[in-house]
Length: 351
Image (tube, rainbow, N blue to C red):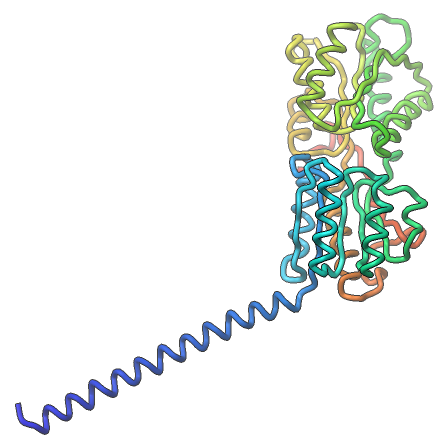
């Protein structure tokens, strides 16, 4: 090999090395630019802190999913589980505020704790959207940057009562003892919870408004929880047995718990049946409707509650008027998402 050939080969090798280095630098610069661009876009998005009273509530899991879905590409969401403990939620709110969230959305553990949350948020000028658990009216008036998204619980109670009234009138055999009085069990969500109290009151009022005489055999609280409702229903059945002619529950999880307990007593096979009514129209409840174990439920529209919660929080976080969020604001502070009756006749629409 001559010297000229050697030098030519060396030059080629050097040229290749230089090109390789330049390509690597170009790729690194592009990747860095992409990362910085993504980080910049994330930094530019508003930060919204969201606290859920407890993650393992079936209905609230649907609301959570809706909030996160609507936030995609628009806001950075920090979603936390308050584990059904108000002190835990208070600490979470403090953390949101210390991190300078642009807005917070709170599903309170205890609706009476809203006042303290509002005071903290007001001190930091951080707007608040409460959802699904309505604060007291006087607390909502504490500041002009406080809003609520939910549904009117009295409407759901009325619809529950109407579903049961329709069944009672159409099925004379439902009156097991033939006394013309509907003997019922009521399983409530929790003491003092507005939805629980109003659903309880208005479901029975709807029955009496329909001209049906009623007798409450028993009432107890199962804290929205299916296993607790199984325990309560077992105790009720042990005491009242076949005297029970209907079961009303403040939500679907408890209704499914009641059904589970009644199954163990031989119900929902052959002609042995007790009408059970819930609220929420969760996927397991719709399955129970299909199977014929649940008489009816009332759609608590989780998708639209989640969407409205995010839309209001986003408008507030970006400094816009809530009127731009696309929802009707009642009394300057409230977004009401309507309920719908769900029975075996129409349940497929809600799957």
